[in-house]
Length: 230
Ligand SMILES: [Fe+2]
Ligand SMILES: [Fe+2]
Image 1: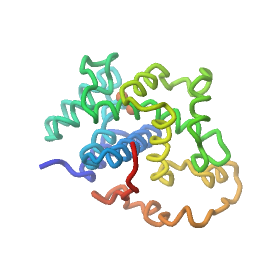
Image 2 (image 1 turned 30 degrees about the vertical axis):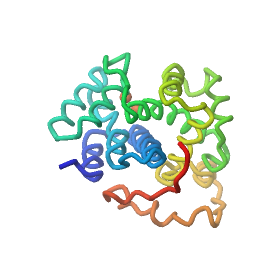
Image 3 (image 1 turned 180 degrees about the vertical axis):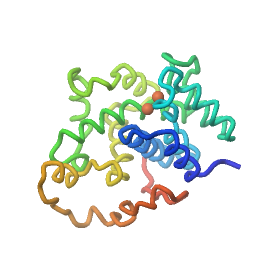
Image 4 (image 1 turned 120 degrees about the vertical axis):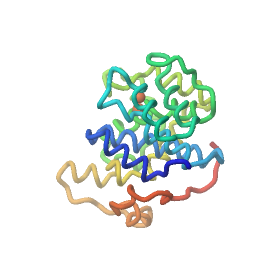
């Protein structure tokens, strides 16, 4: 039987202590799930690959992703998930070429989500009004978020075969759905500046669900998103 999302979250919490890395994994999960929804793929299956792709990064940085992959195999994670996790580290760390849709989507969301996250943190309104154009501008600014591998972002856009603006928008949309957990909203930014958050009504109808700490522990509790073109 396929491990559930709660199994995967428990595993993540066991292996990863660094809060920033956990957030990165949740961000990638959200982006990959959004693509699964747009493409009519299995959201739970795809979500596992996003959530666990950097499982061993903190404990075994030199052997990433091989140690994590071995553990996931032992635990009975599906081959598609394992393959995508191997392929996300191509070509620097594995020779597993990204082939399947899931491989390509994970690859394309991984580095880009880091850039989107960094963009949110330097904007007064965070992710609330973030547009692909601003992300693309920061992509060209090599001094900004140096840790983000621009070549990998470029390869991801090629692999996914969408116009860059469309792909960036999809990643933003995916991450926006979990913005409360990632703390990338305008009100999070206001809090960082020491201001009282200016609550926007309407756009935040789902806040109770996302703010519930148990949300991350539940399996199958992922919100459905409207259908649309990938
Ligand atoms: Fe990685
Ligand atoms: Fe990653």
